[in-house]
Image (cartoon, rainbow, N blue to C red; front, top):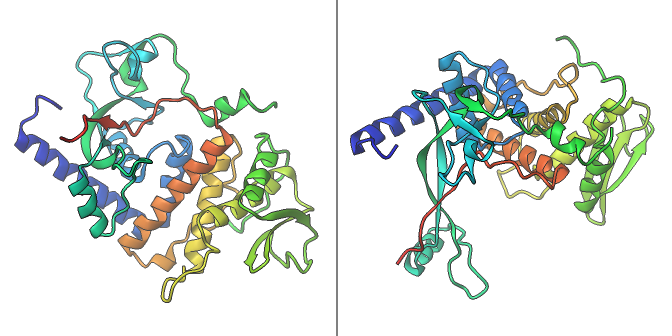
Length: 339
């Protein structure tokens, strides 16, 4: 990137923005595109932010490859990127482009200007503006197939959890065992949010005809899940209810801010599918909330929905794999403190 002229960089930024907008429009227009999107997100364990997830999908499609893992080239001292793993990018390979957050400490004048505009500014204990994201720049990353060197196994969520835990038509309930070993951990995350959790009999007052139900009311926060389903479906439904909580679907909203039920269910079902798939449980036979008729092609709504799904999926997977030390794909570029 350093050898590009100013005009070349501007042209590249415009191209990347156009490609992002085009794919976002496709998500809004076709539910099948949404399914493809969350499948890609699941494959990478919700590792990327929305912009980079879409950009990498587009670039991989253009090259006709199925990507497995991305990292930057790495520092000369071998402490980052592919060099950290004893691999080298082959000469002549063309980089994939992503947005890398630029972090620095803003000046007090900048901080006050941002705060006046309604932007949240992180501050240190002494009140000084903290180092934080101040913008984004185009950065380069490379796919595993573009490298040679030491053997490398992508650090999937399944692989990382194994070090911690033993072990078309109408939707059909999942059958069989839960291969993930994550159920107890998911229940704990629900309880950590302040909700009481219990299994319940189908048709009971707390559950009704639903597979799961989350209630948030004054003096009462409960999650109920059917007690007569197989372990695989129990995990899926429990994750769906956690997703409702983490997506803040039950929080109070202001006038005119009520979320359409279709959006709530799409977000919760998408999060559950992404997390289950990343953990090693295929839920496609049940997941049925991908019809985005509620959005009516509205790009702003689709973008907001996608950002919510990605952020919540990423946080849940992080909470289920707290010792994850994998390289961060959304590479941060830290610059010196502003004068």
